[in-house]
Length: 210
Image 1 (tube, rainbow, N blue to C red):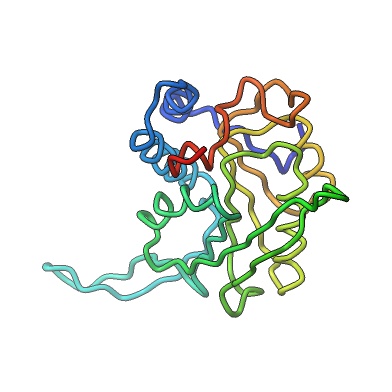
Image 2 (image 1 turned 135 degrees about the horizontal axis):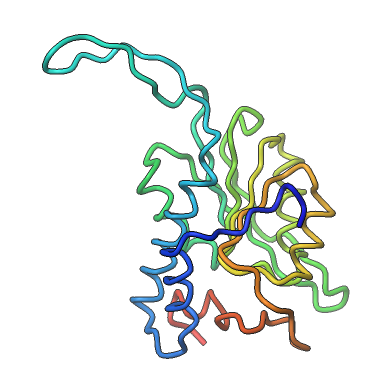
């Protein structure tokens, strides 16, 4: 495993991912679980946020305390399934800016094509968390990182709930400078590029569509 890849081992994350996999888990519970898992994973992914000292007055006295310094966090979900992870992180860092990247697959080349991109300003000064519940082939994630870098982003982390070995290899080799956080590394992709055992289509299960 590359040094830039972190597979989560926390029992709460493992347990909640197992609930996600269950085909009988309904839309509401599925959506809540995705948010909860994203929040739990964010504790690890945000470990490197820089701190500075600020003067605080408690009910007892003034003191110097650590606060997050510099430009705040930027959260960038890959549409549409990545949206399901946003609120979990915002519950920890409500001041974070939120961008959006929309990618679809070209039917002829089968490569990801951008159809929407709106990112926060001063991207080069921000810590950026790119979100997608599933890392399958890795093509969309690698293209999204390319897009963020083209807009000046430098400090980028990718966070997914389930990853396939094939996608993890593609993303880590295309962008060895980013950190990748995975809730679980699954077995493989099937002939339809679905992760096995996986949890089905994350977007459909989050939004209740088919």
